[in-house]
Amino acid sequence: LPSMPFGDGEFDIVSAGEIIEHMAEPAALAAEMARICRSGGWITLSTVDTTCANAIKHGPYPEHTWDFEAIDLALMFAQYGETKHSYVGDYHFIECKRAA
Image 1: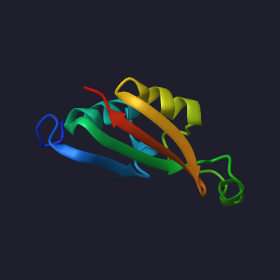
Image 2 (image 1 turned 180 degrees about the vertical axis):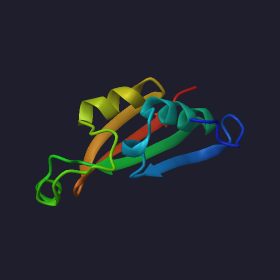
Image 3 (image 1 turned 135 degrees about the vertical axis):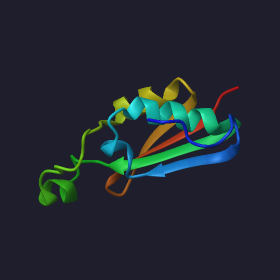
């Protein structure tokens, strides 16, 4: 993942929806999101919960490189600050308050 064209700590909120599951290196996306988020800012991320009823009805997601469980996502972002995982509808949702 190339660096985003933004400075360190440039944003109060950095958000990504339904993209991390397509990334070759999801941890690199998390690191880059953390890099451009200011201390005390928020990182949010969502991705489909492939174990939910609607996803199971949908069938396989061949375009996805990754299939995440809640703990995987929480641990990926926890190194950047206090992280909370929740389910929002059919999606995993991560909220991470960027540490200093």
